Image (cartoon, rainbow, N blue to C red; front, side):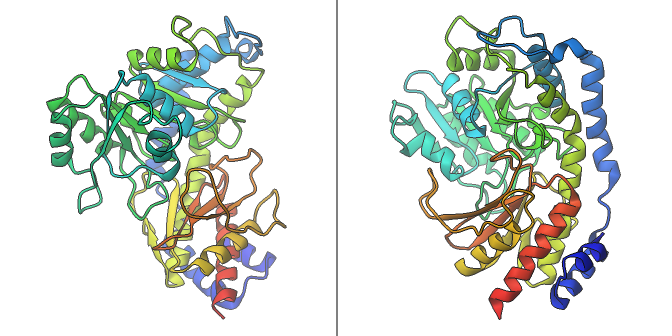
Length: 417
């Protein structure tokens, strides 16, 4: 694959040497890691018994939407949950996460962010923005991560013992110089909280982590997981939406918060997009596997070029984000411009840093997705702040991730001259 890309796109000799060395170091990711995930999704479809009639559209209130109910039942099986609530009316993963936290929070309730400061846009929604949950009377506390990079279980237990209603766990790195957490580690937080605060809800931001590992946080004891349908679970096909999956009580609370008390989950039209949601979910294990293989190559390539990377090539992955430490602002911009040239949409655009709602610093992004904001498609984000890391994410084929990485590396090489 790499030789074909190098020849077709006239990649310079320095980057080409690093690319061949990276390919020799990575190759195929272990298929045994992906087979159980693919089997889990296939079994969910077969056990639930989706039929062609489920693909019909509903409008208006969305009463009696059999396809929506079928999709949510399949999704619940995939995620190891009692029930799932997946709707196009969630604008993003952040929308679903904040709705779930608010739904499980009593008046003047207590939120504990158990894995450090959440990513910028979510913390803004919880704490700093007008009409944030804190502005509406919620009490908010953060527990820093342990020195190992994982959750500090002792500190979490101490904080939760003082009283807590919702414990929030962020699985992915969140555009910050920290590692992502495994599904098992998320479960450890849930079990720790239950020893001191058994009535608290443990909610996990599952964005970027779905179908990466053999199990999800809900398989390991989390009360619910939340995320976006245009990330991993959308398979590059879903057009919009977000989800919450977990205990039945959580889903009832979320539906009441999202729509209105008393309406439950019986409303919400699909507008004819059930086909795309089901098809995307069915393809999602394959797409996530391709993405992980591509990111493994990217990690090896940029390590060969002398940059720090996390995760390392060949290391276990818990999400679809690759951090690359570039060291200064000019390199962040060069990387984004190089990656943009590999996009199937807007390849001729040149990214510029700019203000993004919820981020205190300017951010430079590269994206050319068929679905705007679909970060299962190849993209990158880089807040212009120390330590000047770029976060490469997604890619529906390993070849596309590899091509984008080569273009970004080429642009970085030009910048260094």
